[in-house]
Image (tube, rainbow, N blue to C red; front, side):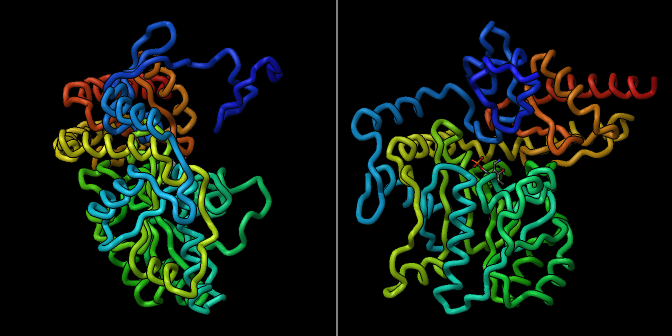
Length: 416
Ligand code: PMP
């Protein structure tokens, strides 16, 4: 029976089971969190894949506070601007995996996806190809929970149960470019864009198969279609380079980002837009792009992002990710062969352990929580491993040792 005294409605929760079981977090520092009764936890997932520079960074708080005191926000619709938004756009263009990019600010990843989808469709409308409205997405995909993102979802549970949201979406298997080729052969002239996460994240952490993105880019070129890289998780260093698009040579036309842009200190997203789409949408005669958000270019959020990028650069955290990558890989690989483990997957500072018995996922998450380690299950069969970049090798190995112990226990449970 639902508890009607409960006022906080948790996202992605079965609210018949939450009241009385909340874990209230009170403080964070680096990769550590404390709850309201002072228990300490290792943050193995960087919140929802965002706290890349770690929790409790006074410099980001100070930068945001200074901006809040001078000008918290003013809309950047039409001709209005603010210094942090201008500076951040320049800075993102300089590191973008697209030459000569323009930057459109949003309030988060779902906003960025909807924005990119509308830009892609608008591009073809302006070019007179009004039939090009289809967006191709992939199985296991997570592209946020707005209208477009829900329609594009490749995690079945997320897409179903709302009635039809957007008709012009096609799905292909995430690891098979030949299926994409077949869809192009059949629907090529109707396809506005292909969207994909360089590494499937919420759908279970699936790195791309060798050569996949080059094939996808080649198909998009052949059929003259736009390619959107959803780098909401992979952007800003998670794989040891600024963007996964660089690593996998994706050459996207649009890149959606959020999360690591501010490391979650304030909500902010950005779409990085290449010249092909920008030039069409900015051309004389294209008229107003009738899209934007109240908090697009929010001054304090942009100030937090600038400070976050300073930290990433000054502390060379991408190099730290590259140092930790083989450590995580070796630790996860050593779990292969345990009876409780079906598969391990990893790339950069991103990993998943898939359980042989999916129903043990919640048990594993609960046992690790009891042992002071916070992480979560993905798509009902895997656990997410995506710590802040500031985790030390010792902490990462300690986590892996505890994980191995608990997986060994679970193996005994199902032998019993
Ligand atoms: N795209 C991807 C790849 C994501 O992982 C997420 C969030 N996990 C989103 C989009 C949506 O971001 P937000 O929750 O900030 O709207």
